[in-house]
Length: 113
Length: 109
Image: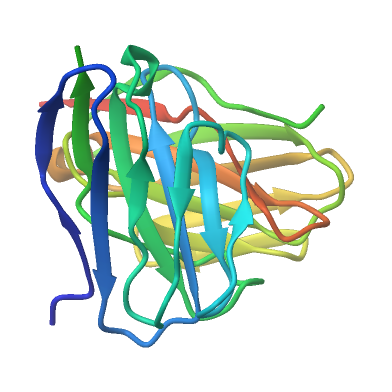
């Protein structure tokens, strides 16, 4: 079973360019999340979606946008990348908004130069 | 502010027991979670505590004291494959997960 799939696995991006990180899950989970993970810091929530058609801002939403057109897909877009957005990005899903058992994708390593 | 504290790194010997501590100060409490993350991989769920006490799951156990804002993850009969980072996370009153920076566990033969 695929579970949750992210693409691309890694990407180098020039500052000022736009980029969309893709995330797809096949578990029919209602809630989905985007986190970034930086050395020495805990996972930080960028945006989340409790159910298809709704999204919310997390702890560090600036410079990022998301959409949730259907249950399975939750893309993350950087409209104009900056070097501080260099990070590893994890997409995750859970059966419900109040569930702390998350299933993570393998991550997307993004480098902005 | 909300805060999760755990040691940055620990070293233990294969076959031994290790305890990884986590203390937290959060706005409300709706459960504490432990995740394992091998280098270069995704975090995977290990355990969940919402009531005080010990939850045992094979070689891994997790303890919670809500009055002390304290949890630990106990790993027994350590194996080389247990070398990983262990992440502590607390769900606050808004049902948002607050994550610690993780404890890197190094297992030596």
